[in-house]
Image (tube, rainbow, N blue to C red; front, top):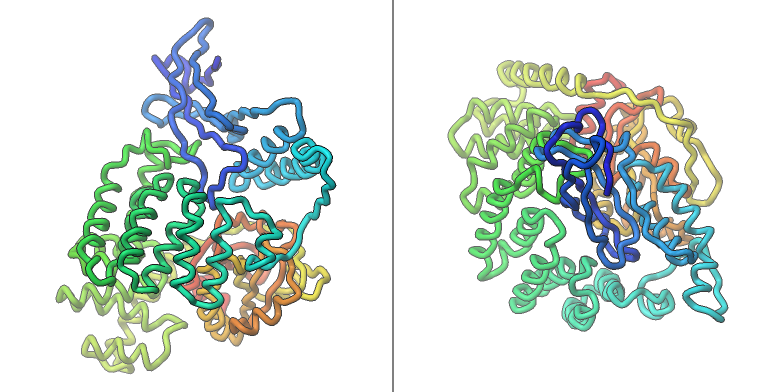
Amino acid sequence: VTYHPVDDLAGEPRLVLRGRFRIAGAIDLGRPPPNRQVATLKPGDGGSFTGSFRVPEAAAYAAFVVEDLAGERLDTNGGRQFELLVHGGDAASLSDVLIERARDHEDRDPAVAAESMQRAMALLPEAMAERHPGAAIVVRSSESIDLGGAAAARLMLPPEMQWTAAWFRWEEDGDSRVALEELEEHWPAAEGRGTGIAASGLMIAVRARDAAAVERWSSRTLAEGTNQDPWTVKLHVAGQIANFPGSHEHARELAHEALADFDAVDPVTYPGRPLGQTATEYEGALIRARNDALVQYGRLLVSFGFEDEVVRALEAATAESPDPGLFEQLGQLQLRRGDAGRAARSFAVVASDLATSPQRADGLARRLGYSGDSPEWRRLQDSVTTALLARTAASARRQSLPPLQVAGLEGGQITLKQIRAGKPAVIVFWNRSCGPCIGNIPEIVRLAGLLEPRGVRVVSIIGKETPDPGIEDWLTQHGVTYPVYYDLGGGAWDAFGVKAIPAEFVLDGDGVLRFAATSLGEIPRQLEALGLLAR
């Protein structure tokens, strides 16, 4: 490597080349490869820096940035990052490189991702012919295939992913014993590949009340999670096994280790720090991630004796989010600690939220010695609401979106502007392969029931899924009553900057994006703060 530094990095005694490598065909389930120190660059001739590194076997694509030793001054090549494409003169290896490049750019530059994928698809017939000489090859751009039974065999899933057929069958028939036997058969092919089989096996084992299987799949999940943030995996396993007979103490140990893992992170060298983010910026993100984890697993951690940490995390979370669920969780802990004054303010936020029924609001008031219609309780609600709405409105953005088209379930294109019809809107991105998305359906139905009478459209958009003739039956079966559309070309997904699903967004009556990647619990208060709810 020879690097000619930008002004901010000139004159340094040494520089660091940080990067990530993508292996062709590797399965990452949306988790990017780790970002590591690849090389130390030392001063060379003419003000340049030089160093070297070895490209991992089977690597097809790599992205890099250059940093000072503290990770505070960076050269990101104008935000594009420095790239390395590893391929021969054949179509097959070039196609692999372009696919990995597209995957790497999905989050940071959708236009580059789309361009790379188009080039890869254009090479696909030639690449397949090189890999399978003499074979008759038919390339289909998309096909809706049932991932169970004989259809899964026809799909010819790679060996490490064939376990998914057992998972889909278990979702249909609930036979945990058979599912565990099948996952055990597939484990040798999937082990170490990061396919998600271990976490799925643990979930099924817990449902089956199979102690030996719970222990086995817990160990495998922890081992398979080495490419993730370790606290995430440990808290997930702790949450799964906490109430399983004989596993409570192990769950507590995992939770304790997870909190210690946060404190042990060096933001300069940690592989989870994104390329282009300074160590100080990542340290702030890490604090937020720790608070998020404490909130997500709050009840579990309180049961393990980490109440002080959870209260501090909830206080930080409620300082930024209007989600009534967070305020209620905080109020419960404040009341438990004998702090009735602060609990009253937390519960007043919940009681004044549009999504809280009058009966529930009265119940919260009574827990604090108020009647639901008392002047004191009303004044308290007004006080906390005024402050919360001002803070929420101040956090809104103004982002214009390009004209966007989506497809109806029966075909035909329609613009997002036509769907909104001049009204504010809540846009939900999802697909049917996303378990949390499906789990959110009842809450979205309730939200639509609250907001539609107040002049707000609730619209869901399916992304990264092929249209299916059975979609309407599926929606009916799952109780979906709000409008559903397809984002066939991915244009809406890219325009909104969707990075993970489920993802919710708030638009005002002019179609301007006001809140991005929000949560369902926050949305009523966000709409109220912007004056978008009809009386």
